[in-house]
Image 1 (spheres, rainbow, N blue to C red):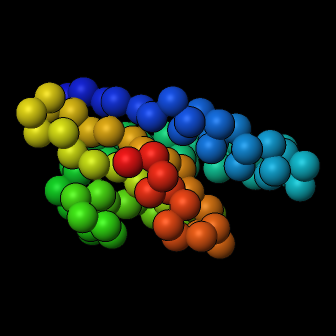
Image 2 (cartoon, rainbow, N blue to C red):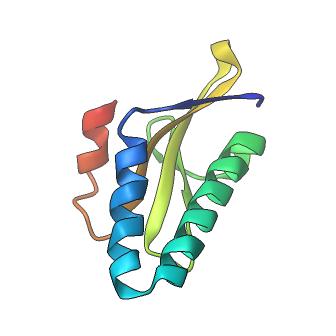
Length: 99
């Protein structure tokens, strides 16, 4: 895929996670940020390699952190749409409010 579409709230997702880790250790915050953006890049470059979690929505795990990048493939636009950067402990249906 060549294009990337990012839901407007994804920036808030990342900022919230990074700020939380910044309070623990600033180096962890930087590491999380790097991993999240790496996961977004992996979703963009090879979207079909990641498992479906709901309908046509897929996820990339941000290991070792407890987050996942949730996305869908927009074939008509040749794009990957990033819907959420989601913490594993949250209600698993919460991100679906964005679809």
